[in-house]
Length: 129
Image (tube, rainbow, N blue to C red):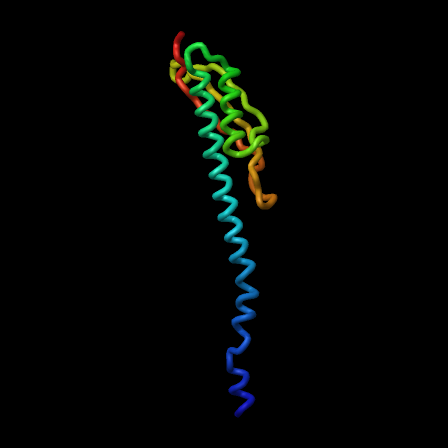
């Protein structure tokens, strides 16, 4: 009788459950952290591209101003080598002349899954001189 009650006790099961559940919880936490980091980088890149487009859209400003401003904002926000490529151009969207800034950047990843590059655009209506 004593042996039977001893087998029915749950001693030690918490340690086994912890060892089985902890890796799964860690994986979920890292995945959430990766999504948050990717959204932050995308948001910052979009804001920098829009800021550069606004600077380049001012009367008398050129496309070099747009690219330079975008790089400056990215350097302040994410560090010096955040953007791989910044390209400014003048184009028409729905009949309106705009300055478009395209930013290509590396996406910081915690693992090897998912996209590795991010391309965002910012637009601003070009002022007439």
